[in-house]
Length: 189
Image (cartoon, rainbow, N blue to C red; front, side, top):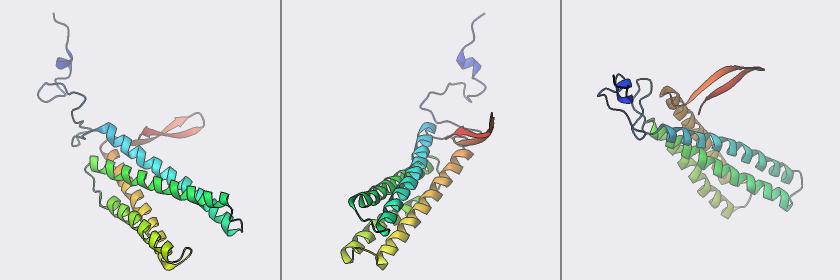
């Protein structure tokens, strides 16, 4: 009697009896094959980390703005505003890249993410023109802020749609699990 082989053991799962290799597309739960499950999860993680970086950048900039508005316009307050703005911009790029990239890999629509990217890029142009006209508050600075907030909102919506598509494909999952102190969130992101 011959020992069993992997090919014989997995023959019922592979339609033609051939084993799949690590580079082959992965079919999850009867869904269409996903090109690269690891890339999808990495892109989605990048987008979620971008949301965290945006939140920390906005809060840092807010502390600087409150300091300036409170009468302390020293170099530390201005550095907080600049660092917060830079962190927010980096977070936007991470969120938009992660949302659009993971949605594209999952064949989900990417239109909202691209519109958000266009609004965020346009906000830089409007902000630059606004600073040339009058460094301070004017209508163009309000328009730039509105464009940037809209770009972030559309990017977050795109990231959420990519997450939903990933959960439908079985690649991203969130579960509530029991823990010694109650319930905990666990999953594959």
